Image (tube, rainbow, N blue to C red):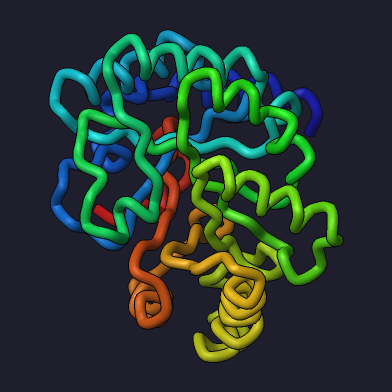
Length: 248
C-alpha cells in the first residue's frame, strides 16, 4: 500500500483546478444561504499562483471569493496568509465576514477569509498580521463547550478587534453520517444547539454555521437554517476523486 501513495499524490496534483475556475467559491450577491469556501492549508496543495487567480477573478468580476484555513503557522504558513492579505489590498478587495452575508451585504469585490476549529492561541498570535491589513475574518469555532477560560478570552479579544465569531459544531462530526445513524433532530440537539447556546450566553450572537468537513445535505441545510441565517460548506480544488459537498 505504501508504494501507491506517491501515485495518489501525483493524481491529486494532476487534477488540481485553478481556484479562479471554481465557481462555487465566488459570491455575486445572489443572497444564497449555503456558501462554499476553498482550503488554503498546505494539505490542499493550492499554490500561490492558483490563489492569485481567485483574487484576480474577484477583482475583475466584483465578486467575493471565499477562502478558509485552520491554524496559522501550522496548517497554513503565515506567508500564505500574508500573500492573500497583500493580494486583497493590492486589488482593492474589501474584507467580508459571514455576519455581513447574514445581514444581506457582503457584495464584491471582496474576500471572505475564515479560520476554522479551535486553535485560539494561534489565531490570537496572528492578530498583528490581520491588523496590519485591516482584515476582518470569520472564526468558525468548534468544541466551544469544552474550551478553557483562556481560549474563551482569546475569542473575546478577536471579537473586540472586529472579527466575526461563529459556530462550527460541538465535536466536529460529519453531519450526514450523524444524521444517518441518529436522525437530524439528534444532530441538532447534540452537535449544533449546545454550541449556539453556549456561545450566545457568552456574548457571541451566532448568525452562521460552518459544516465540519463541509459535509452537508439538503435535509441538514433546512434544519440548520431554522437556527442560523448562513451556512458554509467547502468546495474542492481537485476533481474526479471525491464528490464536492458544495451545492450546485
